[in-house]
Image (cartoon, rainbow, N blue to C red):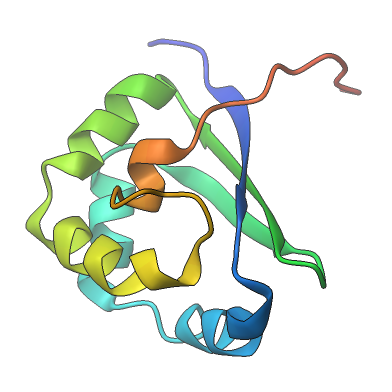
Length: 109
C-alpha cells in the first residue's frame, strides 16, 4: 500500500463573500463528502483567514490522482460551479483545477 502523504494548498476567497463561504461549508452536500472519501481524500481541512486566504490540508496517497478522480465526479462538477464565484483569480476554472500543492519543508512526527 502506498504511503499516505500530507498536502497543503492555498486559494483566495473574495473578502466580501467570506461569511457565505463559511456557511456553505457548514452544509456540504452528503454526496460531495462521499465523493471526497471515494477518491482518497482523508483528514481534509480548510482554514480561512480574515482577508480571504484559504489554506487547505488533505492527506491522500496520490494528490494528483485524487484530484483527477474528483474532476470526473458529477457532484464535484456541480459543487465547483456553485463555489467558483467565491474565489479570486480562477479565470473561469474551478477551485479544484487551480489548487497547487505547496512544498512541505518541515514536519514534526
